[in-house]
Image 1 (cartoon, rainbow, N blue to C red):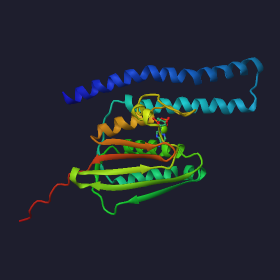
Image 2 (tube, protein in one colour; image 1 turned 120 degrees about the horizontal axis):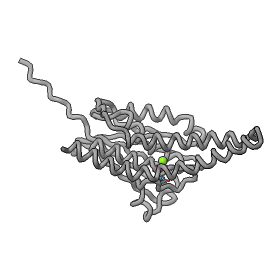
Image 3 (cartoon, rainbow, N blue to C red; image 1 turned 135 degrees about the vertical axis):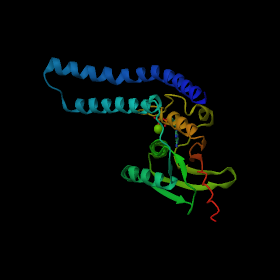
Image 4 (tube, rainbow, N blue to C red; image 1 turned 90 degrees about the horizontal axis):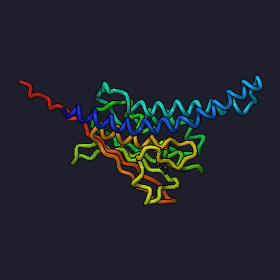
Length: 234
Ligand code: ADP
Ligand code: MG
């Protein structure tokens, strides 16, 4: 019933996406084919071309793996986890990239927060997407703050990630999360869409505020785990 509805919803999203994915993959494939043809005709390949082929292959791989997150029949594996440890892992993962981009990541985590019930790997993917967007929005470097806090009234935990980047024009805000909406030369425009789906799957919410030239904040709220009350011991 509810599961069926969810599955058919997902199918239609996957169906819509499939056409776009096919389109996105055709360009890098055409590039690679061209170079392979060159090898055939000239017997060898000059230096820069192998690099281009590799990066085009990486691009295909990346698009397909983002797509698979949506298309994979989800044997969902929800478990109890701490938001702060999820974010700690992602910060480590992005550490060297942040240093390269001259970006400082500043965690400001509340000292105690209730746990979540979640798909850890999927949430990691969400925060990876959001933090990468923040990094990419600051080509000149800057600061990313990550606030983790509790919203007790709503029984939610929240992560608010703010950058000092280029910002997003107000008229483009509604288009965020649209498949293949990107303004980056090597972007896929799938990150936010995948992230929104994952957050919705967790019955959470994602809100994006932005000011051009000042920066962007992404706030993600997720339901806190309901901690069973200890039974009154006799
Ligand atoms: P991609 O990163 O591949 O472009 P996303 O779905 O992650 O795809 O993001 C879509 C678009 O939203 C980006 O191309 C960018 O224009 C805009 N965007 C997202 N996050 C930010 C941010 N923190 N600052 C500025 N623009 C952003
Ligand atoms: Mg992105």
